[in-house]
Length: 320
Image (cartoon, rainbow, N blue to C red; front, side, top):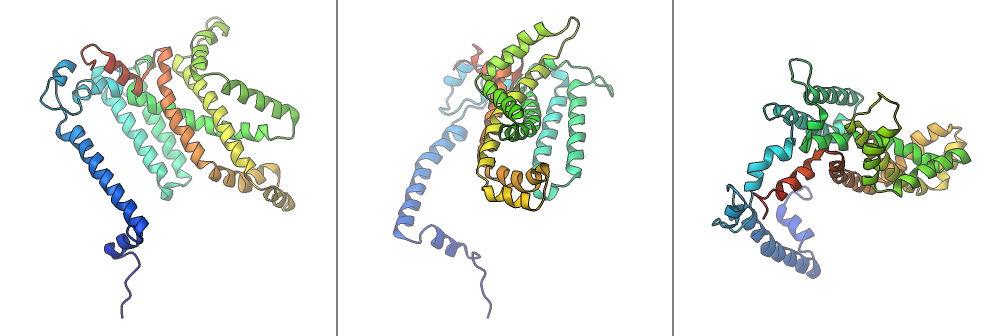
């Protein structure tokens, strides 16, 4: 006699999970009704009645379709994706963006969590740098002031998170340190950065920092913006990590000390893995907010993805 595997029958799964009681049945029917009333009109607005091509915003409003006006994207997609990067060289930031996305996908696969993944990232970032800057292999040099759009957003967010996260761990450990000097320095840095808006940090990095540099020494504005964003993100991430450290029971520390582990071995093998696991939800929320904060680089003359979209919408030709 063969035994059917649990969950193999779709009808049984639906009955057990969606219609197992009167309450579940009513909830399921309400959700299906809302999907029917909301999802179908949305699809009709976004696809069936949408205007896919129009010379300007006025013609888009007067078009037969009553849905979304996707003609703006069709007309401005290059500016949104690549900013002011030279038109004939825009295949380079497009390829760099694809490399970034490929690196994200590979890093999300647990099977790829191996030491060689670091080498893959180094090789990918080197290729992205060559593509964006050029100047070698017959590629035309493009200054980073011309960078923009999706590639700039991915660049700022990736390097910002990559450098801010390790720094935040040291800041969180420093704030919980028993050494007064280290604890005071960590608290002072975190509270100072968290008490200042990111736009102020970018303004200081762009305008005020060059005033304090020696004559003849200058730092690229993209690098200045990246450093400001790293410091800003590190201060906020440090508080998230500190919350995870405080959630670890005192017995975990005592057990590690009873085993004779040093401070760094205790943190690296016992405390931090648990604390970071607890902190995953707020960490992800902070990472998402960091992606959105990249739009503030407009203050130093850089156009990321969100800024290029706003600029496109503000153009008189497409102002709806």
